[in-house]
Length: 435
Image (cartoon, rainbow, N blue to C red; front, side, top):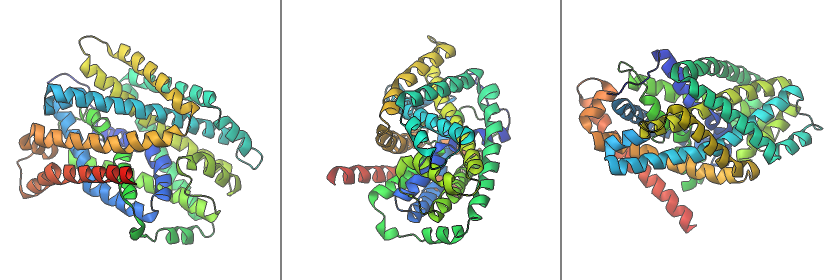
C-alpha cells in the first residue's frame, strides 16, 4: 500500500466531509430545486433517496477509496481493470473540471453579493446597482479567478494544514449561523403558517423530471459521483467506522439543506416573493427579501457570509479531486505543484463562458451536476461490489465477518442501488428525448 496522508482525527474527518457536502448544493441549489420541481413533494422524495440510496453510496465510495488509496483513475483501474478503469477515471475527472468551472462563477456571484450586502445593503435604490454589477461578466470572472487562486493555495498546503484547518473553522460557523437565521425567519408574522401550507405535498403532480431532480440533488449535495468522496475516502484511517461517519455526514448534509430552506422559504412566502425563480433565487429574489425584512442587512450579510464559507469548501474539495486524481495518474512525470498550476489554468479558461453567458449554468448544472454524478456514483458502487467483490466490500464497510444484516446490505448495494439508479437515469433521458 502506498504512503498517503490521512485525516488527523475522526472529528476532523466528519467536519471535512461535511465541508465537502454542505455547500452551494444545499443553500443555493436545494431551495430553488424544491421551488421549481414539486415543492414539498420534492423534499420527501429527496429525503427518501438520501436514506435509501445516497448514504449507502457514500459508504461504497469511501470503501473503494480506502481500499485502493487512490483517486478516480487509480481506484477504477483497480476495480474495473486498467483499460476501462482509466477511461472511467478520466471521464469523471473531466466532469468535475467542467462542473467546478461554472461552480466557481456562482461562488464569485456569491462573494460579490456578500460584499454588496455588507458594505452597502439592499434597498429599492441599491438593487438596480447590484444587478448591474452582477451582470458584468468580466467582473464576476475576476472574482471567480481570485477565488480559484485562494482555493489552490489551500490545496497546496495539503490535507492537514490546508483542507482540514479551513473545514474546522468554516463548518461550525455555518451551523451556528443557520440556526440563528432559522429562528429569525420563524419570528416573522405568518411564517409558520405559510411554511406549513407549503409543506402539503402533491405527489400526483410529480413528473419523471422531478424525481430525477430529487435523486440528482441527493447525490449532488453529498458530493457523490465517484470523485469527491472516493478521493476523500482514500484519506480515511483504517479504524474510521464508515457506516457511522456516512450516516452522520448524510444526516448533517440533509439537515443543512433543510435549515437553509427553513430560513429562505418562509421568509420568501411571507413577503410574497417568487420561490420558483430557479438558479437566480439567491441573486435576484433574496436581495429583494433582505431589502424589506426587519434587520435585513444584518441577517442577509450573515447568511451570505455563511454561504460563502461552505461554497469555498466545496470548491476546495473539487480542486483536490482534480489535483489528487491527476497526481495518481502522473506520479512519475508531474509534481503536485505542477498539476496545481495546470488545473488552475484549465479552470480559468473553462469558467469564462459561464461568466459571460450565465444562462449556460442551468444547462451545465443539469448535465454535470445531476446526470453525471448519478452515473459516476453508480460506477463506483459497481466497481466496489462487482469489481473488488464481496469480501473487500464487507471488510472495508463493516470491518467484521458478514452476518445476515451485512448480507442484506450487500445485496442492496450490489443489485438494487445500481439497478434503480440506472433505471431512473434511463427513464429521465427517455422522457427528455420523447417530449
